[in-house]
Amino acid sequence: MDIISHLTRTVSPAVLGDDRSPAKQNLLEQFYAIFAARLADKDTHERFANENIARDDQGFYDRVWTDSAHRDQIARELAGKHNVDVTASRGLIAMAAPLAYHEIKSLAGTTLVPQFLNDNLASYQHQIPAWASVVLPAGMIAAAPAGARMSDTVSTAPLQREEEKEGSFMKALLPIIGLIILGALAWALLRGCQDNPEPVATPAVTQEQAAEGDGAAVAAAVEPASLSIATGENSELYACRMNVGNETLQTNVMNALTSAFGDEANKCRADVDDNFAIDMPAAAQLATILPIVKNVPNASMIIKGDNITVNAPDAAALDKLVADLQAAAPAMTVQAEGPLDLQGEIDNSLAAADVAMSNLGDNPDPRDVARALSLQVINFEVDKAFIPDVNKAFLDRAAKIMTDVPDMNLMIIGYTDSQASDAYNLKLSRDRAESVKEYLVSQGIDASKLSTKGMGETDPIADNSTEQGRFRNRRIEFLVNDETVSANDGMTITNNALDPDLNPLDSNNDDLLPDGDDASRGTVVDPQVNTQ
Image (cartoon, one colour):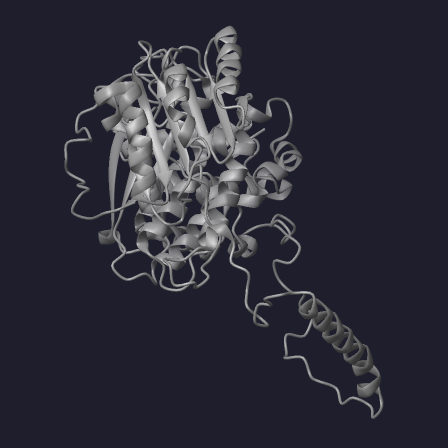
């Protein structure tokens, strides 16, 4: 059972009201983990187990932590971590404590609260910060993973080089001398077999390492060029993106798109960068491939390297699409997209983003930083704008790199799929982009270097008729904020008719999601709102 997610969904809206600050939401989320760990202590719980705790009993927090120094430390540490005023931190904690206690008691049912929390310790222990060890019972802080830190019994002093005993040095050197002699003989034999031997130590230059004609070798770590398109209900070009290595390939792909889709091809966004290959194996067959995809409504196709992956909401149409494309491009591997593997997609995206971040080197180009950040999937909970824990470590690392990049100005853009209303999607996408910004600011990034935009369901990169397509459209993108990108172009909304706090505990009945603990509260204003 995910206790923290439940408290975040039910208690945080009641505490925050109309203030949807991601910083305060994240502060409460971490407090819930500390609070649960404290209640897991039997002696602590017995002090008030027989009391009738009111939901607005703000003195309850003082009875959970009777030591005022501990209460002050919790408020200060949480305030500092999340960039929230200390006084505000104390107020949020005091309001949240009795509400969270009632929710935990409800979840525990007939099980005693300490027993319930100890049984479910694994669901929240990893969210307890290390500093909280002084305000919690022993054993509540998760053990550091292997390799996270050295044992206190291991010396951290520099290793001392021992003097080699006379004779042992030559004994160790003999195998190396033998290898050198064998290598020299092999080289001499190879040289004698060549008519035009290359100079010694001249590196071989692969096809993808060709430089601009001067013969110098360059890094070979380039991504395959790719093209991603989706069709609409009337076979129009619904979404289109390409990643190519130069403008020549971009022009060739655009010509094929224009031939198949006419002026709709102009909506195709291209990322032209030398991080991508300058050739596309399927380029020569695009004139045949694109009309096949166009004839299938709500279809999607991703061409990357030697692979073509397609999808469609109708199984029979999908099978025919695979067969027709394989016949049109026999040298390519054509396959139907498999079921959505949510966790796999998240893990793979973070791994790819981590590799891209590692390859940035010193003084990276801001566009490369933005591209690396965009590779990660930030899988927000339904109707929520809280940063998942799995993304925080990567964002922490990115923040350290970003602080060292001069003139780093990024636009953080949020998108949703097409479910729910336009107005709701715009608001949700803006909130999620703001949440990412506030988290990066909390990690030391200058707020003036980051701007946000909510795009809602506009500018999709995939179809919205399949689960896989909707997943891709729910995304956060980072772009370098220059004269071509404006944060004030009308893409956000200022008035939302829906209840913004998703509050199942308030006095009205206009909540977006039903409250599972009280069937009399909460109505689904938009029946599809919970698919974002």
